[in-house]
Amino acid sequence: MTTYAEILYELDGAAAVITLNRPHTLNALTDLTQAEVRHALDASERNPDVIGTVLTGAGRGFCSGVDMNALGAMSEAGRRLGAAHSHLAADPGNPDEDPNYQASPTYFLGLRKPLLAAVNGACAGLGFSYATFCDMRFVDRSAKFVSSFSPRGLIAEHGTSWMLPRIVGPSNALDIFWSSRRFDGEEAHRLGYANRLCEPGECAADAVAYLQGIAGTAAPLSIMMMKKQVYKHLNRQLGEAMHESTRWMDESLARDDFKEGVASFVEKRPPRFQRLEVE
Image (cartoon, rainbow, N blue to C red):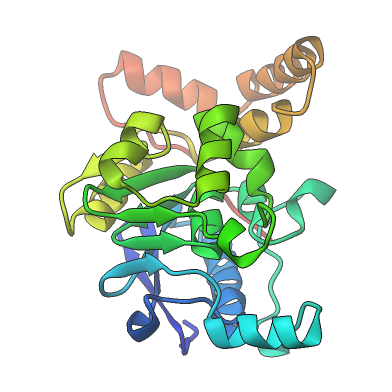
């Protein structure tokens, strides 16, 4: 297993856990951090024992955004800067090579497996975008969110203008973007942004428990296909989505997983589904 400099990558049963590990900066993101996250997600994709991944932060924060030193360099140069980190080259997810899933963090949507954000503290800027593009958000009551784009003279970045309104609605999204006000885990849950509201310090454990729970009941291929359906069909007309779902449903009925799902129900035993193998 690869040893990383700015993240931790651990396995907990069927769940993988990526911990942003720069607590002295509230886990501000550098180019290296982002490359390591991408590389670790690729490891999760290729490990058939992993049902999904939890993304969280070390210490008091989830992620405070881009490291301010990097922001300063961007401001001086007037353009985006970045290091290649070729030793961490990875191409997780997106087996269909969908152009919608090639940027960061939009590539999270193209992953074959669930990615859950466990927001344990401060979540701002690009960190807020990371959490927004995860499939679900497990949030400590005491967590603090802020978009932080408008006070820096920026627009809604990193695809959040597309994703956030689909989670909380257009008016709530505009409020979060325009005011850049801080809101806590309780409000995040009321808005529908937080899928699970957790007691302080428990969000990562709760997210891991969720993944371990579905690992015992759900077919990995079914999980992958349902994620694919949800995100692809956000951009399609209902009729087209229904047609594609019908075709995929016919394919699922022919798989061994369907036979096993029926047999396990009839025989009142846990299912033994096929693992998801990624080349």
